[in-house]
Image (cartoon, rainbow, N blue to C red; front, side, top):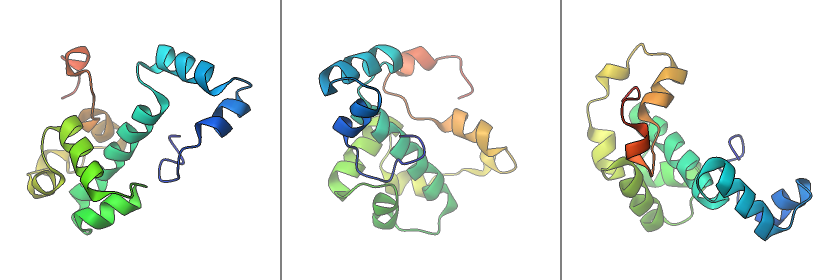
Amino acid sequence: MDRRFAEPLDIGAVAAQAYMSKAHFTRRFKAAYGETPYSYLMTRRIERAQWLLRGGGLTVTEVCMAVGCTSLGSFSARFTELVGSTPTAYRAGDHAALIGVPSCVARLATRPSRNREAHRGSLV
């Protein structure tokens, strides 16, 4: 899911590769990662969208499609839920603090999270 975030998610196919039923795979995934496979995938998509928006070369619609979302409304709602601002406001924001920061560190510092309390005291 991390590498193929822009592709449609087929839980049945992923579960079959893990030799599990869809329901069992979803339960085990949630136990391991704290969120469902779909929620995890959307978080990865939003994370990539943040990177693309910081680059400033694409419109919000182009970013939405580039990360595998097909609905701009759903993408914007999820982005706002996880990041705390709309995609347009995020793109217009000041990201100068991330200039020169290695991408792996920037990714950790800007990683969206549903459980903000669990990440208090991290890099952000």
